[in-house]
View 1 (cartoon, helix red, strand yellow):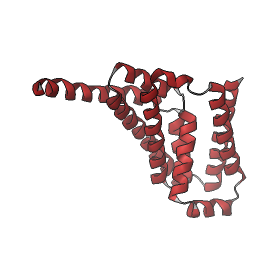
View 2 (tube, rainbow, N blue to C red):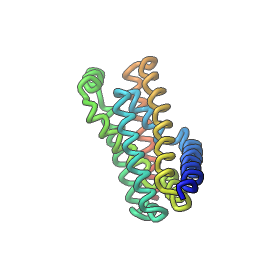
View 3 (tube, rainbow, N blue to C red):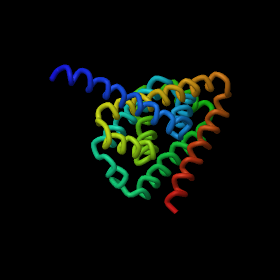
Length: 199
């Protein structure tokens, strides 16, 4: 009995983690969540951005494997899109209205806890009910929920790490004022895109 468990279980478990990692990584590379991480890391400290994104993806993937395919119908799509539009627009306007002295002060004073929560909320709202979450739900219904959750979370964390590294390097090359203007415009574009899906 123990031999069967050893030869079948671990290999299938690791295979599921690997397949899920590859599929989710390919589906999410260059997606809006990676761009959100890149933009936040260009404006704030990298570590709390990465931790906040990882927590958000771990939570979203947990919802996906727990609720399965029904997750897509958990909240009305219009409600999700409106919430995303409001959140992104508010953050974009806040960034665009900041003056140079406020920028320097905000970066130095904004706590790691505050950056983490901001990242968590932005990623959570942007990805709730997204194609990646639906894919995780589908995979978990065909394979073990735990290895699917682990593979998806590792893939999305890796994607976020790439975004954070690129974003934090941008900070060293682009003037702060221009960076804030670009970030604000980026979030307003995503807000408009989310709102367009309502209509």
